[in-house]
Length: 106
Image 1 (tube, helix red, strand yellow):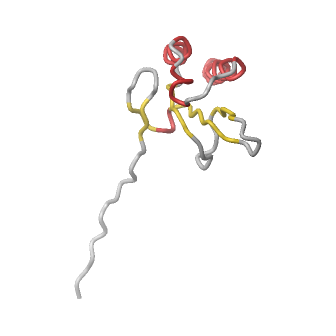
Image 2 (cartoon, one colour):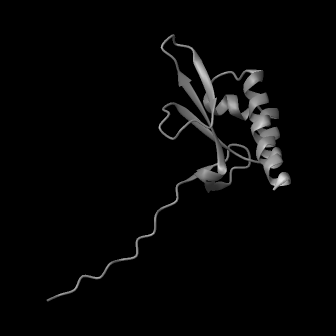
Image 3 (cartoon, helix red, strand yellow):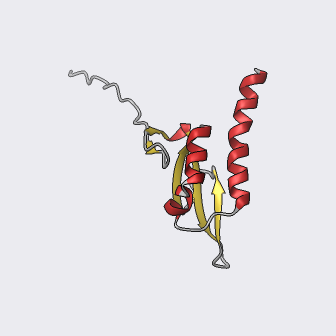
């Protein structure tokens, strides 16, 4: 009787490139921005949607340098091919502050 050996399969980690610093990182370490079309043909930008949210997406590092550079050079609007509201920029900056507050309190 021939024994079959189990091969050690490592799970492939999907990487994405930050739009600001262009470094490839695991998708879980990045903030995902997705342009979603509504039924009324309006474009909506969503921060960190679930992975099953369809639409044009861009990824950005969870660091102040990358977020500020992307805002200053308008890279988010270029990558998503849509104008970005100030409310999205404020939400993006506040999503960066929240993990920092959790680290300080821990």
